[in-house]
Length: 257
Image (tube, rainbow, N blue to C red; front, side, top):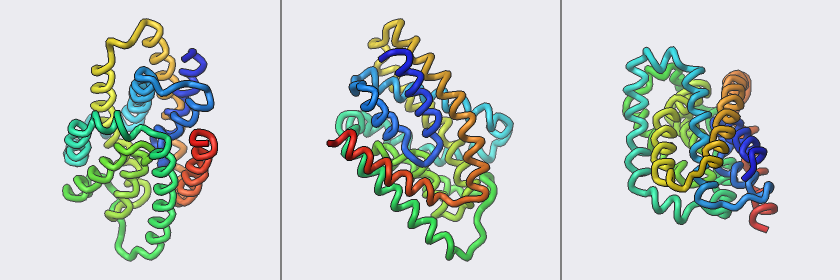
């Protein structure tokens, strides 16, 4: 991996982490196009640069994160399913599920689900929840269960939690924001654990590559999250569903040919 590769992967991570399109799928696809192999360092790099994206969320929502206790109660409840299942299934996920076939399948399946959910929302008669602090604890836990599905590569953590939020009665903006905020403990723990497990494999150059990817991911994530929240005020998630299907098919052509 070169510093240019690290920059490109950091850019892709930041642009896709909080959009419901699967950052993992895009990183694998772009890595293939760059001629990079999925080595242990490559996989850890792709997880570690998520810290840059997390930091962007902290900057954007710092007032709420450092002052809203009710919000944190719901975030902690929602984090529990992924925290427990992630710890128990870490080896299975890393060893068996990181395959292009799984990624392509989940990209397409997730895209179809997004379109179907949006069509279903058109007939929803109940008033949606418009404030994260008003989410019932059982719904927060249920959203956490949806998030745990994202342990399957290609599902998209933000995609799974946003779909869960929409099905459980949140409006688009609230579902998206809760997904972003839930990412802070989820991705922080996942990244720290992965780096801890493989830190002995890192040379000085590897740490420098991580720094490039981290900084690039932070800047691009900061920009894209602000754009995304403005976008969903006026538009549905259907364009992202269509996009996922196209990328999934592209996966079949490029990675699985």
